[in-house]
Image (cartoon, rainbow, N blue to C red; front, side, top):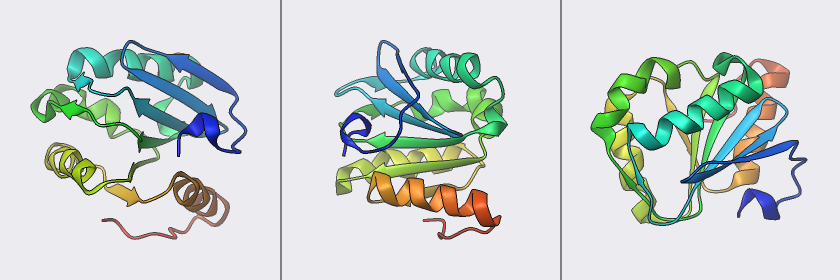
Length: 141
């Protein structure tokens, strides 16, 4: 499900050349555009847009809503690792088995645990539960 089609209360939407970024309270949802090739040059504007909107990456949860297929250059994540690891949590929603491939590569290069969900609403509910209780209602995939 695309974020725009959900019943979530989106506060702000920011566009980059390869992504749409949705801001909902302390949650950032990123949807990479179909057939994009994602490397450092593409990720930096996404991170910069998030910082511009919220100020501190550690104040927000990051959700990668993988509604479209795209390619990832995982080796290019290494210089951005320190920034990416600042997020409160890092989740990925995968709708097809093929989307799990990027997730495998990302896990190799990032130290932050990545939580996989099969629906956007499950991810948002788990994050809200964690914020309200201080407990995790998920297991790291």
